[in-house]
Length: 125
Image (cartoon, rainbow, N blue to C red; front, side):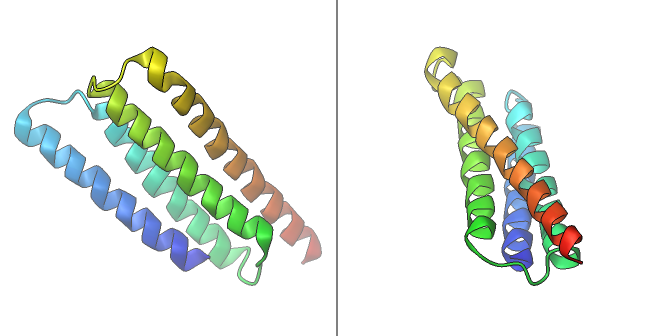
C-alpha cells in the first residue's frame, strides 16, 4: 500500500504544481484554496500515509486497508473537484456544499481509520 500512496501523492503534487503555474501565468489566483487542498490533503497526507504503511504497517493487508485507501482517494477527489467548481464559479455554493461536506467527512474517516490501523498494529508488536 505504501507504493500506491506514494504514486498518488506524487500525482497530486504534480496536479497542484500545474494549478499553481497556471495561476501564476494567468495572474489569477482565485483557485488558491483548491491549490492548497490538492497539495496538503492530496500530496502531503498521501505521502504521510505512504510513510505510515512503509514504517509501521509494512505487512498489514485486508479489507480495512483497502477501505482506508479508497476512502482517502474518493474524499480527496470529491473535495478538490468541489473546491475547483466552487472557486471557479462553475457551481453555486448551495449546490456543491453537500459534496464538500461529505468529501471532508470521508477524508476525516480515512484519517481515523489510519490511526486505528496504526494503533492496532503497534499493540501487536
